[in-house]
Length: 321
Image 1: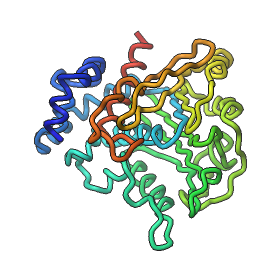
Image 2: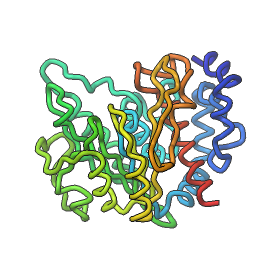
Image 3: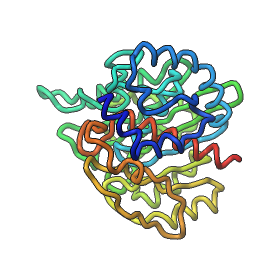
Image 4: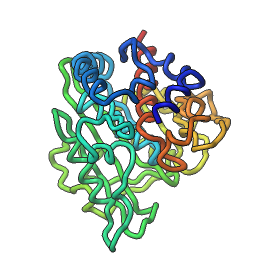
């Protein structure tokens, strides 16, 4: 794995490394650095933890970011909120995580998520991931439920994260979109403004109150008072560009269409969105990656999710210059 990463750094992945803002990373950072000796990586992360917290405070404070999409978007969200909570990027497949296998399964793959012996482990996974993020000064609500057997129409996973930092509050949300629709419960945001009044626990509440196609759901998203929306179309390709532009114009929200990460062994597919909508491109930099950057055909390991979030930081940083 180390050899593959380092050789690849000198090829296509060098582009990824160079486009990440130095505002967020030490000058010595490279993809190869996450494959080095685990002890050295732990020391580097500890030394830069305070610096990273200062950077995220300056860049993300008083912002509210909403992600909308399928599981590939979920894992990027999980990577981001884990970083904000614990102060380091979770590089689990390289054996460099500080907190062991439990945190690895939370961030970029789910070994316990499949049904086994008649038990639906997904709802347990929702609870466990929520517990891990509710730590070290971070808070998260998980409006999450998955039936057994799996039914995409009845599966719901909406997460609402917030964290107070020295210069404001960070808010990040993830809304699940598999089939071009978003499902809500009315005792969660944005319908319930006080998160302390939410009594439904992760994996416990199977009934939803509102299911909307993606385009009308984007109007509901505005009630979360986001500063930025990154919206993907889930398992189906639809044009949401003009709706995103209208949302940006009517509510002063910066919006981006969020492309999928490239499938393992896949090729770049052209993405067309109407009204010249802004695009957060995750496909181009991930096509052509080695197969060992993925844990199945569709889902990338934490290396990919971490890099996509570093690109996100770079985008936000550039927008404020």
